[in-house]
Length: 371
Ligand SMILES: Cc1cc2nc3c(=O)[nH]c(=O)nc-3n(C[C@H](O)[C@H](O)[C@H](O)COP(=O)(O)OP(=O)(O)OC[C@H]3O[C@@H](n4cnc5c(N)ncnc54)[C@H](O)[C@@H]3O)c2cc1C
Image (cartoon, rainbow, N blue to C red; front, side, top):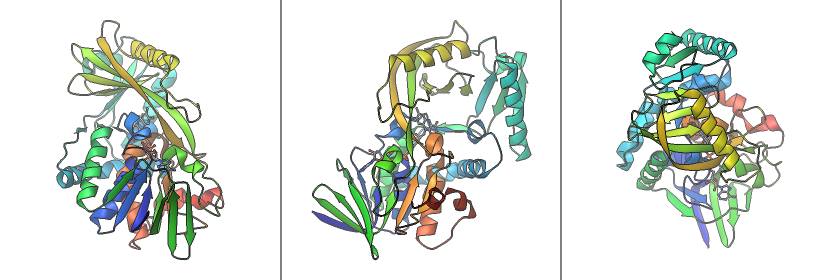
């Protein structure tokens, strides 16, 4: 079977879906292809936190990208919800980061200074104030940092909304099909997947951790490696924690239905997407060291996903150095949900010849050679 479109997006994770939606609403004809259902890769495991200052510790392109990404989120979610008619849980209730050692207290002071230097409110708390701010926090916490601008979004609802909104703009989704090869010949890009041949004027390689397995003809494999993250889903018995809370060993994301997500392990386990007893045990230990011993919860479940890591921890966004009609949008590691809207609009602007944001220079595929 043969299909053609203006743009072919390979990978229906949060990155591929956000790009498809952005291009669709700009009037581009788009086909998205995935071997699973949308969001079934790393995205289904994500805690959905939107917390640039908790993720990046120094000035540079990564902080700039994540901060600008957060600035767009209100507008992005509002538009996706309106275009899709799908409700998306999205809260900007801030983060509380707890320090249990002198070293982590110094880290909090640095993070607070970094945020304030950018005009972002960041309040350092002493031990007594921590207990007032979060009654469930372990009494061993010696300091805290509140950044009210941070938040979270429900990643599975965001995917559902993106797919619905993109579909309303005419985007087609083809699932259950694995792309085996991508090549550019002249001005046409071809992707083959079993008996399907898909042609387009441009292709977007958004295959997450699997990007290196799908090598663009003439290019080297993308240096994207899987970093497994496991996450626990608990249900609080009694009051839940009040806002996204980070300890030294885990983070906690409370939902208003009493759910609490506890993340996340960082493991180099190849392409194995399974949860493990060791991972669960580490996360449960993290909860026990972050919250008071009389805080109670039941275990609802666990999940795991493969974060797409890169050698310099920056995503790879832009045209291939050897096949310029193939665009990479991958390697978003720990921040793919946060970075989805900005990646989509940067990529759409550049592909449609509107504007190449100067920040993209640090993310260009060619920094890794013949990519
Ligand atoms: C435990 C955990 C917690 C996280 N928490 C956060 C967080 O709080 N905030 C945040 O911003 N980010 C978080 N992340 C990171 C975030 O989830 C990822 O960065 C993001 O999901 C990556 O999206 P993606 O679309 O690039 O990849 P994926 O979601 O993995 O999607 C890639 C898709 O490509 C498909 N694919 C691959 N190869 C092929 C092929 N050859 N043919 C067809 N389809 C193919 C796969 O099936 C998959 O569906 C977390 C990740 C984990 C694991």
